[in-house]
Amino acid sequence: MPVAPPPPAIPALSTVRVVIAIVALALGGFAIGTTEFVTMGVLPDIAEGVGVDIPSAGHVISAYALGVVVGAPVIAASSARLPRRALLVGLMGAFLVGNALTAVAPGYRTLLVARFLTGLPHGAYFGVASLVAASLVAERLRGRAVSSVMLGLSVALVAGVPAATWLGQATGWRSTYWLVTVLAAATVAAVLAVVPSMPGRPEATVRGELGALRRPQVLLTLGVGIVGFGGMFALYSYIAPLVTDVAELSRGTVPVILFVYGIGGVVGTALAGRLGDWALFPSLAGALVTLMAVLAVTALVSPWAPGLVVAVLLVSISGSTLAILLQLRLMETAGEAQMLGAALNHSALNLANALGAWVGGLVIAAGLGYRAPSVVGAGLAAAGVVPLLLSAVLRRRALRAETPGSGPVSSPSWPGTGPPRPEALARVATAVQRSGHRRADDVLPGKPRRTGTFGSARPCGPVTRGHRHRPLWTDVRHGARLRLRPRR
Image (cartoon, rainbow, N blue to C red; front, top):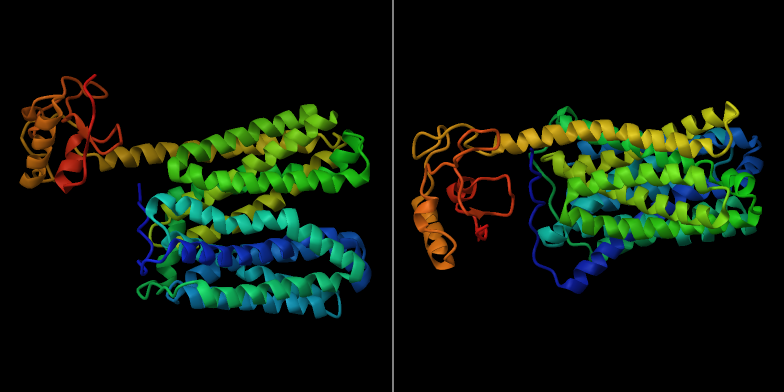
């Protein structure tokens, strides 16, 4: 399995400085999340302002999503050489200009162009910010650092979008985008002030970066995001009629349900960072299966108001957890192109948005009711399990390929690997003698099991680095730090 290289090293920073820097990066996520979702809240005002009907005004949302899909891979691949902080400032500056153009757009067509341009830096910003945040902390905390940056987007759903919607309805829809412009300017100032300078990758090329798209694990993970995460959007796109027509609650309850959804997003994003640091791939599989289950449950309990509230909360938690874990998985499997991997996640999620909304609309148009999108969403999540299973098979094969000694052992050294380093063997023998678990000669080269996993003899010993499927000599040969496995 390809192992992601560590981010470029930077000078050690104090804990306070690291926290402030990550908050500055998350502020950009807050601005992006606000502009992405506030359009839904002021859509009738936009339609009236530019003289079109509401369905036509909805294309403004699609224009932004198209900008995200196009901009994420193109910008991330073409800017890998640039210094990270300067790139963050440039991306947020472009985002600022896009929102300002939106606020002054004189007509419908110019508004569409402005929203497309605003969406271009969306994915690339999160890609660069995730990479920078991961570089500021120890390896064991990188998942939490990335999720902290993405937490800005989740908080936007709880606080930024409602506040911006209220402002737009009270003073005109253009004021909403002026507010986002101010947030973007604040992000630029904060990044310049507190985010440390970090070099890019001078050796990177566009062709090399886009080569990540030839990696099967990258493509399969993108497939999980597009199809599996589309299930959540099948529900979210039609959550208002689900509340009013199925649960028979008043229209005034819809913002409350959306607030609950936002709270779930914050919880899931925070949880995902810890799960990613603990066990990334198993947590990813668990989040997808959980999303599938809670979507199916939502269809059953949606007529019951308390059940609907709990179900929406669980859908949000599992969906946001899945989104962050997908980003971490793409960063892991993209090799050198980590920034591209993180950016591609946002392209995949916007395609999932389009797929979920489209499929949910089809079943509603077919007369199946407003509970049907939840059922279809569960089906999409189940379909996302297919590429995930393929990814698991390839991952297991790659782990076996990395593990020497898959056949019988007839000599003290394995063909093509060379003998263990003598100093490493000495350290292992000393450690085993001190432990009292087994004799030191149990870890001599070429000592096989009586039977391997499938009946073949394999070298083994009581010392591993924590992976139960990795034999002794993987660690001994490279002289890694070892720990003892107790006698059974």
